[in-house]
Length: 223
Image 1 (tube, one colour):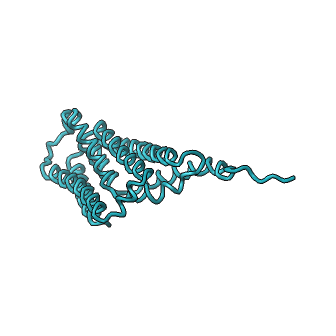
Image 2: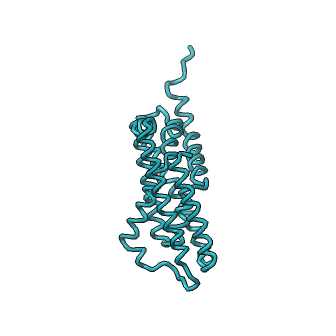
Image 3: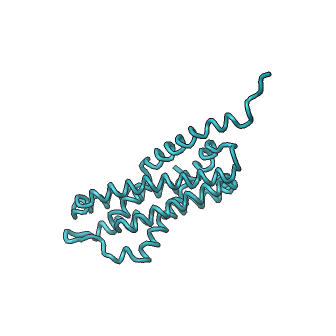
């Protein structure tokens, strides 16, 4: 007598596949040019590696907040509320605009005698400020909320508690972003000798500042 397949067998068979697909998807999304990469370039060149790592930690915290909120249904409510969604967009745009303006001001003050950032930027205030920049940029990015609500659940299986599975995927999402940004800022740091030349650094600051301001306007405008 034939027996039907054991319940959950199909789901169990997909577990080895859906996790690598999730990692690949989130890695590719992290690699896309945007506010995160512009911010990491700015932090690495202007403040140094320690504040850049603090910014990465802040960004990861923001992704965890979005994914946890999506797991309990809060972000779906937020994105469905036009006023709340507008507030998030405006806050995220403001963070990017402030960073962009500050970068442009730094470029304007720069001269041929500029040296590397002072050690004061690596103090507690600098690190907390860098962490807050990463956190604010992640929380103010509605696209992260859209991913958490619409894409992340597609990788959740019924093999275990759905809430815990969703939160675990959120942790994995944050870890993937941390790995990418550590690699990215390391690469930027390796080219620091070139990009910290006064003329090159000033030009890069101008480009980065303009990009951050443009992204701030785009985020605030819902583009």
